[in-house]
Image 1 (cartoon, one colour):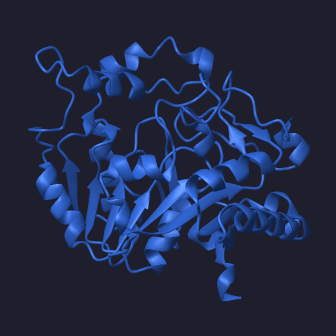
Image 2: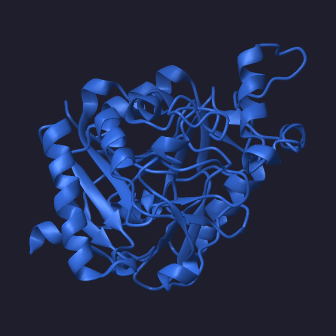
Length: 338
């Protein structure tokens, strides 16, 4: 049964995945939302009431009125305190009536993991401990360090750690699923920017694996891009050969800051090489183009035409369905309805 839709970033991250996830969940009919996030990325969604929800772990899709279950996949890495903090945040905005199921193979982050990454600032790392925690899991030395969530009590009856069998049953019984990918395609460890990259790939295939959703369930890929791609501050690596680094002053818009580290983002011109490569790797059916306000209506129309030509040439399908200008639900328009 084709019942899963996945959101994937087509650039370097911070394109608005949290915004489109909330938008789709509010306007859609999903009963299950899934993530496998790690602490080096944050997603932001602002609802109709102006409530701002920033998450590192939980899916922004929790805000959907039909959503009953939130799943955290085996590829996730997170801290107990952060999970409880996010659940309390959703409670405060009236979205806490939901059950959270955590795959027992997800990794629980601790202070030692963050300390291990303290010397990685030379590659623009957020130094949140994700890589060190992933290595702990791969080392398979439970007598020294057992990083898995198996057996952990989170102290909230809504949060349940489940076996692989129970997790797969939840997916099997789900009617409609929204999967929220993290970071961006070009940050993937195999995407060509090593060592200025993250510790895993950021593709549809990777996220299906990290959330343990069978590929046969996939019915739609929603790619997310922005008119001016960004990279995190510092020595975070180069861009593509057909783009140049610009500045917020040159663009004439307020500077953006990273969700996790609160540092000013680097900003670049749009790269067609990047979007073609990401389209080839992820095969999107629909695209959300965000921050159209940075370039205006006429340039947006030309960019949409170019992106759709790339989709036609390299996927045989795919079009820009959503346009946006920020993180709020009111900042997104479904242009397919026009």
